[in-house]
Length: 318
Ligand code: GLY
Image (cartoon, rainbow, N blue to C red; front, top):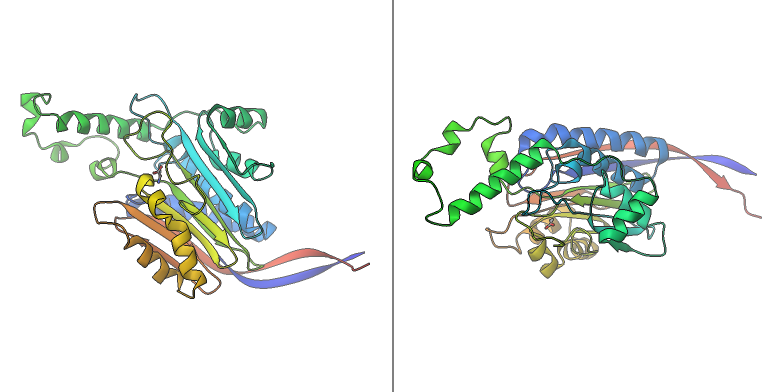
């Protein structure tokens, strides 16, 4: 026999669009929060909610994740990383996965296997086998961003820039659909942290990497404690230059500060302050008592906090 228990608790969903994402893209973050809210209200499952937020941003095309992922230096290769974790012990990551629409769904699937991480062709084949590939195509925004990087790399080499372009004011003459600054900014990773109605925490993160990149390069996102962390004290999602974040294990540093009693905002501020100004970095976090956002560049974000009533079947003791 079972009876229904109704639980009321404030829930929080907080997402970021990556350090460097312009505030004008907050509509994409807001859409992700709304989709995640529907899932949380329906299921009460913080992890399902965080995954849904990231899945929606992977579809957006502007953020550096999913179809918006940065192209590698050859202008063709797209290799993505994603991870999920929650305070119940679910943990899954994929690295350098290709031809997959939603790497975060593959990371979620890995969390149901005996492994915690699957990489490269194995990850791509796993996605295909589970019917999670979809028809991947890099967004037009991702392609434009790659072209911009090619130009930037060429300009850096003296003598290779055509004379007519030396003093040309490209910003003033920019006539592409996206704003010049948005293409100029190195973009990074999307992420979501959720506090569920039962007080549990979850994080999901997804990225196309950080331009420019060689084939096979892996950043912080699939490494637990670097790009993400979730446990009894809260959940943390990090964005920025992967090589620098891994060296400092930023997500775990922020989590440990919350565990020692710091408010999430203080923990995020202190974490970002560990990096020199020239290294782009950002973080979001949620704990039992609050939430925090910090970045040393512009970073689109959105959040919602609301009381949730979830119907739960509770088994009777035998
Ligand atoms: N933060 C994403 C990366 O470095 O790959």
